[in-house]
Length: 636
Image 1: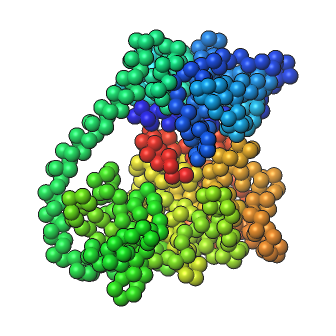
Image 2: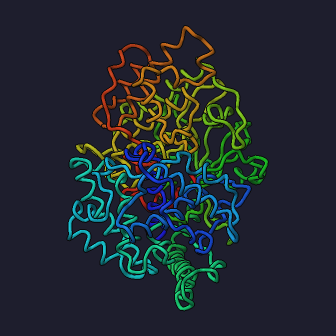
Image 3: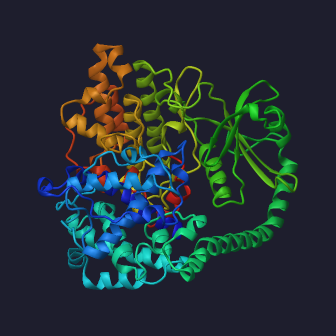
């Protein structure tokens, strides 16, 4: 839970620093003195871990979130001293960023000064903005808006030493409660602005509630999400006794956590081992390519899959995801297949996701879904343990992301033609229409994204990976479930409240349409404008009458006569990814719009700006989604 608290706090600070209000810089910047009111001397002495920013920087997002956390310490210190959340003017903001850059260059940190303008592209983004979050700019205003009772609870919960995970969890709960009250005022009763105001609570908890203050290692680690590095403790300004305590914080607690988790896992494994072994023996007696009842799939033998893939050789590895690795294989009859080896079934949800995918996709037959040929459950030697495999038809053209995004090193890839782009989008729409209306109970995929759209030899698109799919329930308007999926594709109502409907898939489909037509990723943290979500970026251009600028250059130059059709696809993508559930079409309606059988209605208004009001990828930081988010930060 401490890790969860840290991740949400770090990324809320990201939003704060990328918000349009920050970019506006405040109305009194001309009168402000261009001097930094922050004492940044702590930057070179505080024991934070600069590893993510050490050149060459392999993960710019990780580096920037680290620097934002470091700067958050200074903002919280100033709040503690002055009662003000942000800086007084745009010039003061620019001066602080320059000073921060210089502080990072000092030993022992010694980071390049070029990192600051990369992570803080707008010099005025730390300035006071009275219109941001109910106009709260001071600690006194925060108390008045949130209420004395909630603030008292926040002070009590976050005031103690937050080294223990239980105390950090209690602080998180109090922070969520306080932010909820603040959001009601900021959003006229709507919770959609919850995370836009959460940074106020983060700074208040660190700068005011914490008795030790934001420069305490435990407070910085728990509340501000700052990763610590114990080798720097000797240069910390804290006392020796405090150092010893904090060393325990950053070493003993993680070690104890690992030991505890290992012990629980061992006990569970022993309890399940006999059942698994007995079940595996029974399966092995029946496994010889026996057809599975009521499906077209079969139970494969582990030996046959090993032979087909060359012993699961590295040369045959064609994909790697959060739920396993995929190998290319050739069966004895010459059929080319994709063999997906699931993650260790003893990890969390391993068995559940395997069973879920087999049960759901075995019964599905549609030209735009990847067909499942069979599965395999094998109890191998002591080193491997139980192994689980899914066998699919091989899709020779790979996944859609390989055609619409640059490769990992930034090199461009061959672009899809308009005819191919149109065909891919329509194929995905037909596959989702089948899942929602072609089977009963209807199926919600939950993870529509470019990497889960595979292309066959004819470049026809097929929806893949049903490990997260869920069936609907008769008479229920939505399913309430744990939040899972991929950042940037999650609909806000699902990300915030865990409310899953067919419109959740429609939202993800809308994001995918915009990705295909624009070549831009769902989340783009590098955009100099600070607009993170593709939906915000496209919405802004379309509302300004510049829909054509959403299209990728290759598409705009290809067929000038097709531009109107391309723009229609952009409008449908924006409509499908609308913030408000009721404004989104169903998949049959979206398909008819894409095919030109139905006119695209005028785009309904929506809250602005969505990316900063809801947060990265639709605010996956609901209480249910926090743990999932912490586990899936790499999946962007």
